[in-house]
Length: 253
Image (tube, rainbow, N blue to C red; front, top):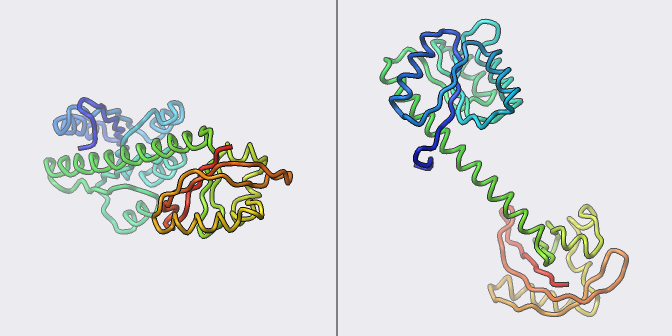
């Protein structure tokens, strides 16, 4: 299980039936003592909370469908404008149209209240943990990407990615030193940046990297945005970028 020990899992329950809210809290806490449950007897009261708290790290939202004022689909639509937190609908209404409408609006799971109590909360617990663990993975992937992006852009070396010789990415260091704007480089040919006397050398080195041969840093000259020619040292590594084989070049200025 991906959740850490003693990590509180924040769950929101929305249902106009007070008894159902109380029973749900009791049964869910039996399933997992680390559930932190917030109950709301109307969709509007929850939406007010959500807007004031700016999501407040809600892990899972569980809602009824048939509620006065705003039904579960209406609540789902409002929630999706604020957060992508997993949304589970638990309702006595089992019509196909409702289920299809819920799925089309981004619901995570759907459960009917018609099953017996023990089965209902066992299934609900399973759905909560499945949705929660998936959300944890998504958050970790986002954090990892943000961290890697930060490292790449803070690197003192220029970093450039190209696929089939066409530039796909340049970090901030590369752009700042060569005084290019990103929009003027992405989609252009890598060799257009290389000074004429070094183009053949760069092609040979690229072929070696594609074959899996490691190459050391080597001197060459590249062209700045203003036409100035500057000496640099470069190396490259074979990578997969957005599903394609490419090269990541490292440039020392």
